[in-house]
Length: 331
Image (cartoon, rainbow, N blue to C red; front, side, top):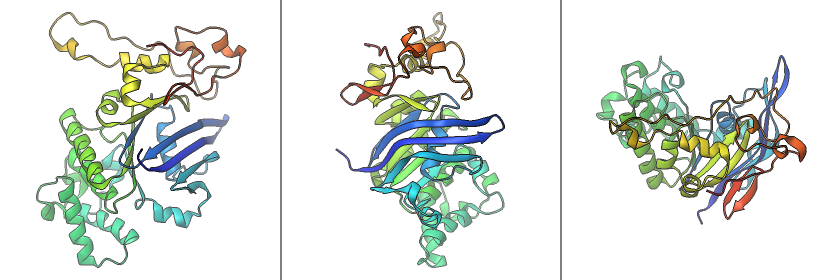
């Protein structure tokens, strides 16, 4: 068993709004192991990115607030640490790649300046010449051609794929234990997407870091992840290793997500079957139903699901396979 380097325990995050307080993340639990990737999947608004930002202690307060739980990095609770200690951890021990590199990179500084800034903050013992040399090495590491020339370019002079590679180079500059990748390939075409994912797998093998892959793309999960946590309305509704989850989903929501993936057969020129969809909409966090949050979209719903016996809990349905459902599926 790989070394456990991060534990998220019973995480609760709330936001204050004009309509009152709303719980965006409610009792989330998962672990990150050295050299392994856990995928966190779900529809937009399910709490994936909020969970990731909580690990980094980047939830804007106000309006957001982490009101419960623990985030243990090598046994130490990050939520109990002073902000100065967190600054030393961010980008150093735990790094993050954001969704859109064009908005994450500073447009008025060269990419070299921005990588050097990370090194200056976390490795102050390096001289300016050493920082420059290491910055060029980082660009070379992520496969950017002519790194000694590209290091003097500005973000707008690079393609989307190159900018995302720069973001990865920045995040890996200090060789972190954990990399949080929040939709790292969303804005990229499929060819560049495959290159970025392959690059991340290669670097993970070389550096031995744990990765949290946040995505709504189950194809990315199948390709890159070892374990998967499926989120819905701020809760994890199913958690298992990737092979088990795809072969035998236990929650109707997970099964619906998997069935809605376009199959390879649909491209063969034959009559195309209509893709299955999950009917209905994600309920508002201000008006969640009593009982199971998925009840209005589930074909197996009954009185038990509607709250006659309380809310379903995340329970182990098989070894290493947990599900939050009163009627877990058999296949």
